[in-house]
Image (cartoon, rainbow, N blue to C red; front, side, top):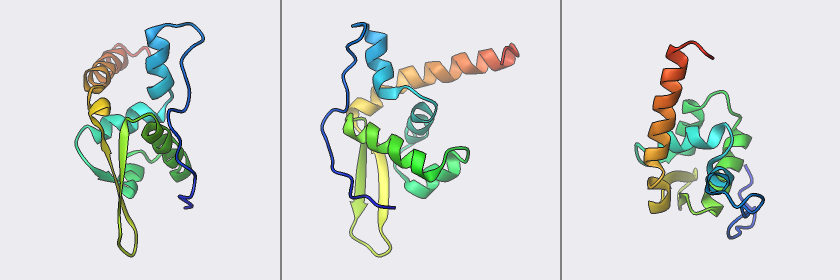
Length: 118
């Protein structure tokens, strides 16, 4: 995979409604980001480990989502100077602050599944 994509600062602003929920969703919205973040709550993970934990997502999609999370300051990407390359991902302090949100989402989803609504 080509990792030569230039790094940027904050990707986008949540300015359509001015709502705090919009600001949160602008960072963690989508299907794969919350799932990746939830797995990273356990600690550092290598890219292939994340791919195994989220088999429904393509490697390309995981790469894109991780890059966006890195640009937003939620995830740190650690590259070790080895051959073959070793890359690990971990939550930043800002990313760790999402733990209560992610745990609440899991609990709500569990209740939803138990009620057989989905």
